[in-house]
Image: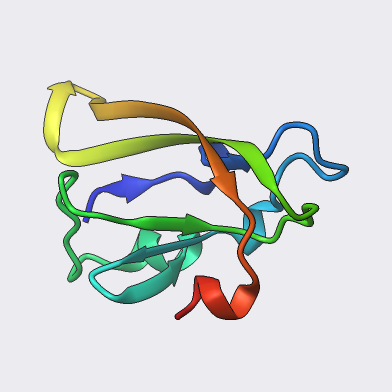
Length: 108
């Protein structure tokens, strides 16, 4: 699995009372398994291919309806060395309009 840095991963819903999900609430789901960012740092057995789906979730109180959601993620690729003291990192940013689902629906 590519390494991620929880301090550089954000889950944001502009226009909400609490616009950014707390870092410790962030979860990354891939291959049918959910991980905290702390668990991902230690996990070298699980692989995620960037063309495969992944789900990023976090605790964020929002009203019903549609919201613009922005996700910023920085991936570190530890096996591609680009300098003596640096590995490849990729920054991804995406914004989508999404409808609120109840927690039970989100985990179904």
